[in-house]
Image (cartoon, rainbow, N blue to C red):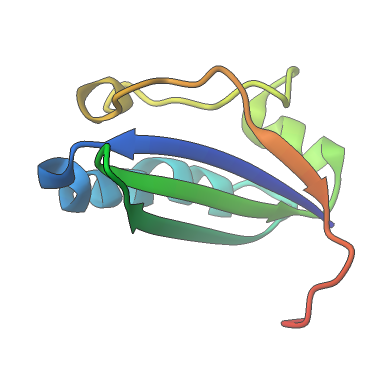
Length: 103
């Protein structure tokens, strides 16, 4: 299993609205992609605003490419993201899941 991790920060006053955007866009696209195993959206308040961490678990690189396109290291953004994000990082992290106690 491969974990794909993206992070983005919004202004505190926009955080609840952005969470709804994430659910409607990234979460819906990931869950609708064959080979997606799970999605978690984490949030935490920082001195800059509210940071969201979007973790999606995938069965293979092929599945990740179905979601992200031919360059899986690039972040996937939606038009609404520009309204909320303070920065749009170009990349994501991928990690091999060594242990998953939920399974």
